[in-house]
Amino acid sequence: MTAPDLGSSPRMLPGCIPPDADQLNKNCFCITLDRDVLNGNLEHESAEQDFGATFAGARQHLFSSTPVFLPRSIVEEMHGVAKAIEVASRLEGYRNAALFWAPEIAHRDHGPAGAFMGYDFHLDEGGPKLIEINTNAGGAFLNAALARAQKACCTELEQSFRQAQLDDFEAKAADMFRSEFVRQRSGGSLRRMAIVDDRPTEQYLYPEFVLAKQVLRRHGIEAMIADASDLRYENGKLMLDGIEIDLVYNRLVDFALERPEHTALRAAYQDGAVVVTPNPHNHALLADKRNLTLLSRPAAMAAFGLPSDLRMRLAGIPKTTMVTPGNADRLWVERNGLFFKPASGHGSKAVYRGDKVTRSVWQDIARGGYVAQAFTPPSRRMIQVDGALTSRKMDVRLYTYRGDLLLVAARLYQGQATNFRTPGGGFAAVLMV
Image (cartoon, rainbow, N blue to C red):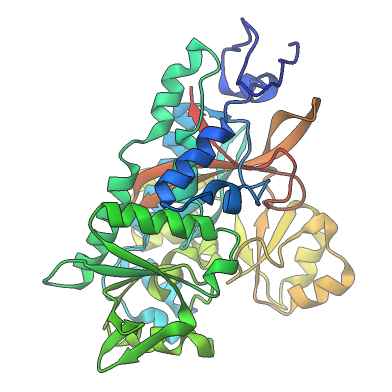
């Protein structure tokens, strides 16, 4: 296929629509993101002048201009994996096993199911493979804005773009937080919530916090962005600047709330004085990577009572093993086919492809605290960067709540793991074909 003109308007040459998603990802180089529309939408939705240029514009690799094509059947298969895991997390045997290695605070279940669960997949010829589960999966509000700024570059794709819009995303997000509040509180309604992180204005995804705040306010929920260290727990209430907080949308990566600056939030959570979502209990049941050693073992899931049809869905989870001093020598020999991740890690920090591991790094891994996951290479998306064809790795994220699908997004990148430093990379709109 001849490369299309990469002008400011999204274009595709006539007849360049191959018959399936794989061919589209290899041969379709159309640019569908209208960045002017995106920046205008971000400014409107944030209610802040020049927001798009100031924040999103300064993160030039946050959004990819190129969409990712997925068959609807693959999205449904991924969703099936996520729903099976959610069912497994409610089984007594599984819960006991997962909580066995969890910190004490995670044993407290106040009711919330966990807002914006994130299920990350690689795609290969055998189907989607779940590589990670995240309880504070970032990017949902940004990806919703990204979807609304896409333009169909030909009539054949117009329906796919309409499907990608998810016009009811904002209402679903607001209803999700109201549901989390009700799951813990027997009476009353959600009035005021805080979006909490450490030094939020310094976070790379801070623009998302601003979008979330405005979305929630439009749906009748007062929302504030807060540094966790500014919270106070006084007289049985979690306070921010003298105002009582009903619910915390927790974006911290201190999953057990152990750091000194999280003392107030930890105490309020332990006492059930505030609704926290996602919370240590959610993380322990779903996102601790040691749980993948259970979920990827059919015999274990059968023993826990997971029905056979749901166990079949979990075949999409690569076999995962805990690294111990007892199996370290064997895993070193097998390392080329493995990917090593810290059990409680986040954001691709301290993760290693087995064929890249040095002896000095292995000494740390072999002490334990890591899992070894069968390596599943990511699929590829061909794009154009400065007029030259190039390949980018691709993963797909499903944002869910209680097993219901909220949004589908992709990330394009190069290197060992996802990042926002890749030319042509970043969050990418997903078009189902």
